Length: 487
Image (cartoon, rainbow, N blue to C red):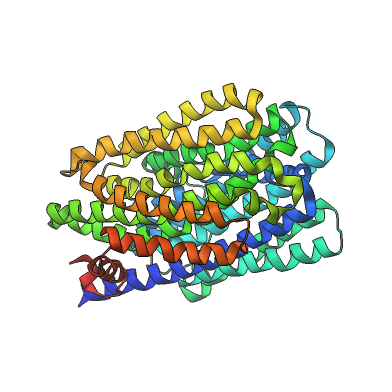
């Protein structure tokens, strides 16, 4: 009975998170288009440079403590008040240090103008508020409750969209526009605190037991290390672009970055439901684990390959969404979108490693990829600006795939040729779809063209045997809210 309840909770939380993720990504991308069309590349670059710069430092406030808090709260709920109180105490200190670090580095690195520095200072407020919000929701996750966090993520984006759009219509200063983020972060902070205190009824206090905090930091170190690598890998390219080439190229680069970032809800939603199954199979059915992994690779190839080809061929028309000022984003988008296939299939690879207690291997792979990306960015960005950063995105994701798949083969019986035949069917169908797009893209509305192209793709996919009704049934079952999901 208890197991059934736990499984139903997992399924329910996955549903909440998946729906919220889709809504949040759609709203976020819509707001990005509004910003891009109204600000132009240079001011858009300043806006996202400030966010990228402070986001890198945000990990030094948390240091992996939230993941540790969630895990330990789920294990022994009675110990969570003391754990939460000391983590809050540590975060007060680490926030102060991180704020000083951001102020110091923004004033000694590069020749940033007053507006850029002021935007970073405003973004600092979001950095601190979001870190404490994450802590409150991290504790709530330990009680297997993601409902309110999911609602919060949507409300956050609605506040940003409504206020930001209003400020844009009123032609307000860029600093005022960024205050929409501060307002949303403040709401999330108050909301998360209230949910934890009054709904989950967790006593919230602040303690400074430094011997206990030291123990927490030791246990959370693996989470901290991976988090640092991941943040640097995701956001450092924008900072380096600003440093070497200027804010204009950050704005140009953000077009391809945001399109890829928005599309990631597809593998994230799929893996959110598949990850518990992988964990179960690792303990109980290794053969089924290998089958689930191969199928997940097939399905993510099935989604990512046609998207990559479509965006590559339609990039010039997609750029028009952001006005002619972003014409320079055409080739960076073409190069970056080729990385989408590897970004998608890296999700099941990373999930398999985590589900099979290979987190250290994941961290090592991320570290190798990060170091390679930093070196390549410092070589290519000064010469090729946004195009160079896009090439690094492609190369680094291929490297992450190679490193990850080598580890997967040590865990399960897997050869890439197990997926290769189906990959060829998918690729052939996508290429035929691409021919249709290439020949008719100047004669049809882009939305109508994409709809017809999708139908053509799936038609050829069925004809070539790349997808069967049984496969569609498997995808449906992977999202079912019952025990069959992991049995």
